[in-house]
Amino acid sequence: MKESYETKISFPKINSAGMKIVLEYTYTGSIKIESLTKDNIIEAFYAADYFQLPGLQDFIMNTF
Image (cartoon, rainbow, N blue to C red; front, side, top):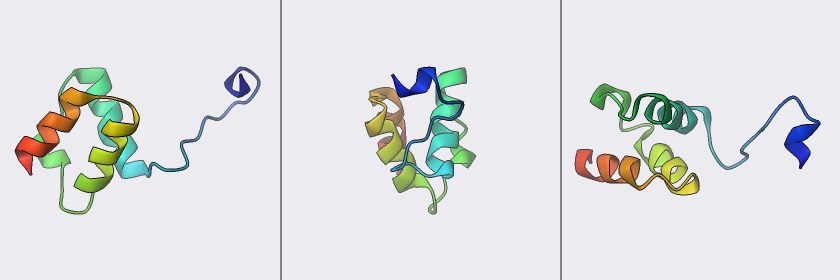
């Protein structure tokens, strides 16, 4: 795999705002409602779909 010899992993279709929310959810099992804004909610949902996190998707849908 490419990750075994490169020092950087990139996800070209996910921006930093979406990735930050995914990481918060992954590390804590939840996210603060303040983390979702009108500017990043779509990116967060897309990132949750990309990483197959249905719990995060449900939270985003219920918040929206």
